[in-house]
Structure formats: structure tokens, C-alpha cells
Length: 393
Image 1: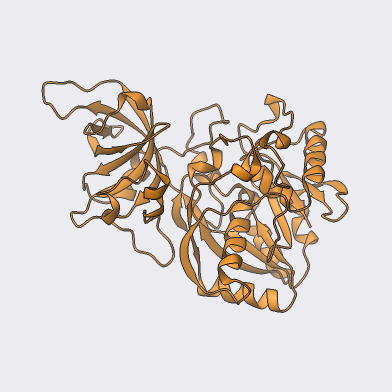
Image 2: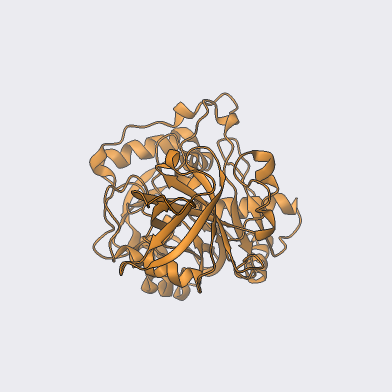
């Protein structure tokens, strides 16, 4: 599979099939069901999902919660005689440990490898520097206007300045490292002034309803800047039905970064290098996965974030039982990958030429997945984050 090109994962998608809104009611999406071995397809509804599982299956969910990471700032240089300028869009991408700010966390891969990512997790406190400052990597637009040393002010709707940040590092493609001044509860302020970071293919401003609909009903650990979208289909009633059918549920956390939507700037698949994302495998989840694996029970991943977490942890374990831990993963899964844990996959439809489409293609095979996508286009399925889903088993 080393000869595959990124262009080999292209497909034609009419613009009108990209979902701009969620379904009127959660759980009403369509679902394309694929038999992994044969590639056979069946059109279904997500409401049927519990009936496709069997007692003893282990369903693994990602309980990361999306933060209102899109902010709007005005520039004011440190020299008092200069006036604030036009509005700047700032997208927070990940929190950074205070001890790393002396060196760049943006400019090079070598420096990235020394970074400690500090998105909150079930077993981590929210880190700050000794002075209470918050350090964040961010994407700034228009980036070319924002230089190191500038102060960004973030006004609240009422007009007062809710947050201030200094630009202390500059990277490519609009990347910046921001040092926020301590101003009380940072996340409470984000909840007050931030916007839900809808993906770039949703061509509208976020609405109040997105604060609930762009979260899974089981989200708990805040830290993602994009939703683990396969989980958006679940309702409390569907989770109750799964439990009634004897389906075991385990919960992991992987905080989704904006790298999910970053274009691949290489030609060959074997040249792809992914962003790092922070994950936590709890004791409860590790024990459940170990039991299911030892007993030969099927492990069903809800979304590509769960696949990446489980398969990364399996590689770390090197054939031994999984141990609870937190860490970072940059695992890239493409055709030819040997799955060690995941036996079935629920996933949304992904962008052409994307790493997520390559991951899904690795599960049943590229030709089967591209044939399924062609079927989905012909049958007018809704695509991407707020769209329909696909179950491969």
C-alpha cells in the first residue's frame, strides 16, 4: 500500500450534500450499513443501530467535550499611542503546559516533540503557569497582521474586556502561541464570550442551538475544538436500549484538534504526518477492553477518534494487556494497517483526500469504502459533521 497517493482517496461530492444543519431531532440520521468482508451495503436508519449489536459487544465512546474555542479579538500594540485595529478571529487549538513556553511550541517538529499538551482529562488538573496565566496554541486570521509582542483584547458582548493575551510565538499558516492574562475562571469566560467552532465546510455562523447539538449527549471532559461526530447521533433513549440489550459501554477521552480538518500537503500516503492529540485511557476502560479482548468479544468503536486511541494504546501495549494512562498520539492509519482491537466501526462520512477517509478505508479496504461513498452520494446521504453515518461490521 506504500504506493498509494492522497489523490487515490478523492471522490465527487455535490456541495448540496454537505450538511449545514443537524437533523431536526437527534438520532434521526440515516445509516449506511456495510458488511466488512464482502462490502455489501444496506440503507438503514440510525435508530436501528442497537439491533445491529449483540449481547457481549463492547461499545467504546469518546466523552470529550467541545469548548467554545472561536473568539474574536481586536489588536492593540504595546505602544500606547497606537489604536486598536479591526477584528481578528482567534481559534484556540490546544492548551500548553506553562513550563514549555520558554521554547517555541509551534515552529518545528523537534520543538513540538518537547511540548506537553494540557487539555483537561479525567485524571489531570487544568494547568496554569505559576502566575495563573493560560498558554494556548491558536490559529489567527488574518494571521499576517498579528506579530509577536502584540496584545489581543477580547471584548464581551457588553463591551468590557473579558480576556487579554500577548502573542509570544509565531508559526506557519496563522499559528500563534498566546499568553492570556489571569482574569478569573478562564473556561467560564470562554463559555460567556466564545463561539462553537463549527467546521469550515459549514457556511454559517454558529447559533445558540449548536452549543447543545455540536456535543454528544455523553460528553464530559472539555478540551476538544471539534466534535467526535459519530457520537452526535446517540440519544439517552438509544443508550438505554443498548444497555437493555446487554451491550457493555466503555468511555475513553481523546481531545480532537483542528488538525482533523487540516489539508494534507503531501502527495503520497506514506508521507502523511498527523497532528498530535491528547488522550486518556481510564482504569475502567482499560479493564473493560482487556476483558472483551481476552474473551473474544467484539469491540465496536464509535468514531475515528476512538479507533485512533484504541489502536495507539494497543501498539503501546505491544501484545500485553492495556494499562490505564494519559498521553499523546499521532498515529496515522491507512490501508495495510493491522487492527488489533477494533472489530466494528460507526463513523460519519469524511472529506475527500482526508486522513480520516484513509483510516476508514483501512478497515474494509479502499475500494469498498469508495464504492460505499459513491452509493451514499447517489442516495443523497448527508455528509460530514452534521450528516449521516455509516456502520462497518
